[in-house]
Length: 232
Image (cartoon, rainbow, N blue to C red; front, top):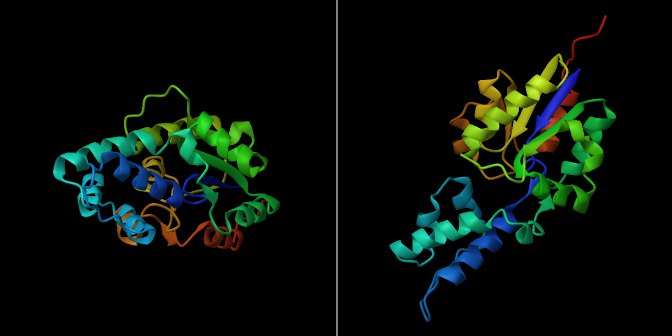
């Protein structure tokens, strides 16, 4: 059986508009009266995020001073995953079609995300995504989970999933961040990095995924064209 464990934000959901809206909000909240700023356009901002430019640096490049940049970074961190801003997320181009193709081909789909239950449920209900992932194929954080950091938390979620899921002969993970690469490699799962999310090629390559594709559509093409072992 072929199983695909997919991250949610990046491979399935395009979060760039949410992040950009929060960036603009945090700039406005941090700005002093009549202080001139140099806001980035969305493409410039997203390039910075994908290249892992630190938040305070993004703030200073936008016209904030050093103290303001620290305040900006803290506000952004406390705002970016709040429910009011989740409305800006949209399915990534081609993602739903890719999930449909994989499901129709009999690929078992598992979602693994650092979203909390309420954040995942919001997107599932908004875009009818529950049809791809039964309850026992959803791995996320509880609403009261205290995060320590994605690169530490996600391998723990992967460990739980591998303990609970039935055996599968061919397991892949697809994700867009170092947390996905680390979670998969820690537990011996083959991993595909995609460029539709919040890391660019340079950043993903640092963590040596087995493959890098542009998006989950190309991932689906690859998986569905694999020469799968025959069941005798």
